[in-house]
Amino acid sequence: MGRKQQRGEATVEQVLDAALCVYAARGEQGLTVSAVTEASGVSPGSLYHHFGSLEGLLDALTMRWLGRLLDALATALEPARTARSGVRALVRAYFAFVRDHPEAARLVHSARADHHGMGHAGEIRDFQQVRISSIAGWVGARQASGELAPLPGPLIESLVLGPVVGAARRWIAVGDIDLDEALRTLPERIWRSVAP
Image (cartoon, rainbow, N blue to C red; front, side):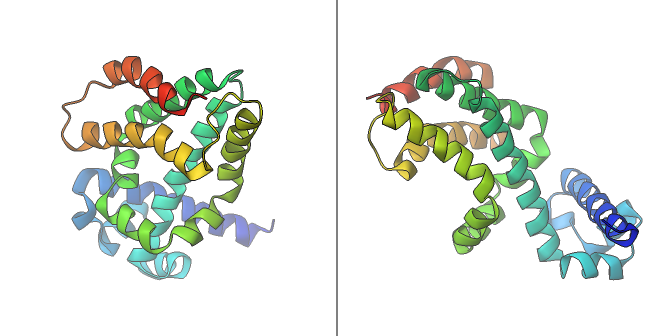
């Protein structure tokens, strides 16, 4: 990798880091080109060069953190020896991500991210394919061994992650869910929905 490319990548990381800080402090409405360039020290021209628009920056920021969430989930599954322990590991990893990165979790679970996801689901799936394929492979292997119900992959995903995402959203938006209690309760209930 050449020095110019390294500088470009460093600039992208700098802008993305600053954008999350601005988002955390001011919300989506406060995420403006001037706020991000001021926080990052990068010129507006450089921001537009790397991201095309403020919308492009927000998409890149969301994809960055969605990728990190998926990495955390895939990593959590690697040592799981059984489907049941894998469900517990997924719930634990998801809630840990939400706790450790609340502003990024707020972004990933935002209405804007949902709207973008609905309009670009295929592109997002293609972009995250490596991460998604390792999770899908784990599920497929557990189904082949008879540890998981023989349901379509997207349905397994919905049954496992649907309640977790719902609890995380509620914790982010309202704050009336205790994540420790959810971690004690959800894995076994989710397991029952996907057990053979």
